[in-house]
Image (cartoon, rainbow over all chains, first blue to last red; front, side, top):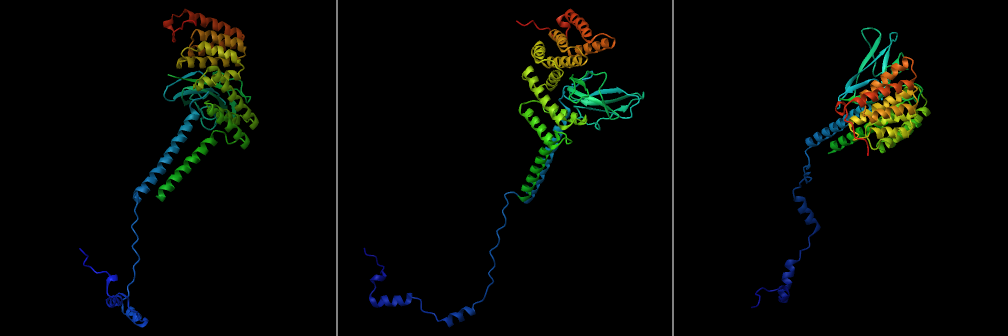
Length: 193
Length: 221
């Protein structure tokens, strides 16, 4: 059955011209176009709204994470520094008498020196990085003996006393091997219990 | 996000600064830059070799306190590193810092490597903590005896004899005290040690195995 609709190319010529006239936009005069446009109300074109920022993490959570990270860094630093300090005091070299210490922690080891005329006595050794200001001895009640208790982990430590600015080895302790620097040291072995 | 990045950067900076500080703090600041750098390299070498580094840093600190010049401090640290390497070679694989230090000290005192190997062999059984302590105590006594002018060979022979009988750390302390008293009493160091060693050997031999702090091991072979 034939399609009842009629196509343009099938129109009779007069009708085809009429259709073309209807289809084609009539020419507009410029004055008329300007007048029409002037009569239209004008509108401010608002800028498109800025899309709201999409956070993968809320700002508060980000700040909190930053603070936590900073604290964690500081904590790690403190732990590292402490570990280093402990390492300098812990496992080292040689003895006096043999002192007992707990296997799992430092124990007090008593060092004493009879020096009745001394004004200031301190002890230096592998346990305090040979720092003469770190461990001053106290004069005991008898006024002749200087003493101090030092917490030491089990190990071997070399040490000396500093008596009024001069180094002196512990006369009752074993002597360390001949010293590289011309002044002999003493040695203490702190054993684990 | 920006805050998070800043915080992380700060944390990294602090950690880095800490690392720098720790590296720098191992070597005394009073040394010159060349000596510091050289000593730091020795410390790094020891660390890489699995040796304790604290004795090296302490040796440098000791040298500074005793007023030694940079060259002498560096030389002493170098010598100690070599002694620690030799000590580990003598002792075998050990992480006992006290024992390594005592062995290095014996080398410093002039006790020959071969003698120290014999002492380590005489002590070595299971190389338990007690064995290690006894050997460390024996070596400390040995060094002290050498410092008291006992010839190294004689001192080493006495110590070996006692180690073979499983003398304890405390027995070495007693031996040292007795020899010291005898020397102060006028005896020659070598004669004092010989007499005290004989007495201790006799006492140890008289003990039944159950009376000893350490059980007696069967002879090798």
